[in-house]
Image (cartoon, rainbow, N blue to C red; front, side, top):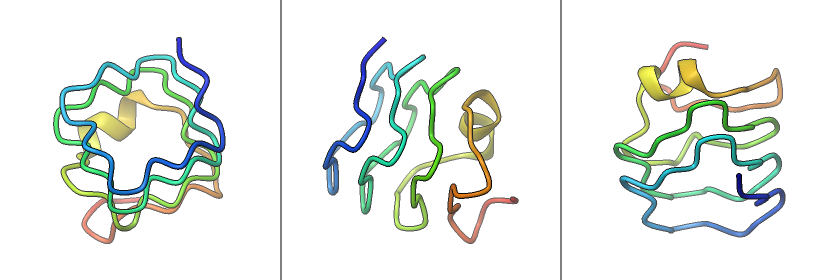
Length: 77
């Protein structure tokens, strides 16, 4: 389980990455590519995901978010 809290991952290609259980709270994922990234039990609290690419509702359902997590417009809150 990686600790990436507060990490600067903008524009990172994280497609197919296994981020299960990773702590990504408050990380910068602006414009990151997340297609097929495994986010099971990943901590996504306080992250602005609005500009990410490839993120799906299925991925988010398996992750841990909170009211500070900002989602892309195409995904339900």
